[in-house]
Image (spheres, one colour):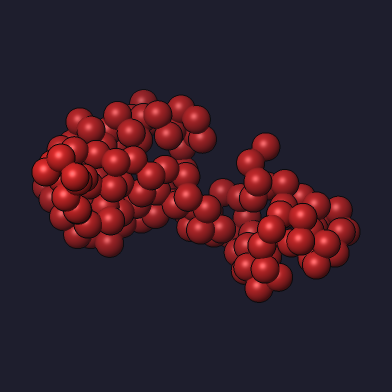
Length: 129
């Protein structure tokens, strides 16, 4: 059971926000945000994906961090340091994520490169079949 689910489950069982937040090491403000997102979207919320720019490593190569977060809780589901934004690298990362977490109802992106390309999310809908 992931931390977010455990956190919300304990609140639903009637434990106080203060006690649960203290045990999980988060502020009450953060706890209320997580709980309110759960109440609004449930555990089946929509996911968000983005490349967080690029940066040069010490060896002179570039790193392209691919992230996927849970839209409701903002929980980081994937942060993969990729060598490029090539389709196959992203598909491999998403396949592993889908295997571990299941398929979301939808994935949101900012429609920037490469998500606004002709391949649109690299044809991820093909991975569900």
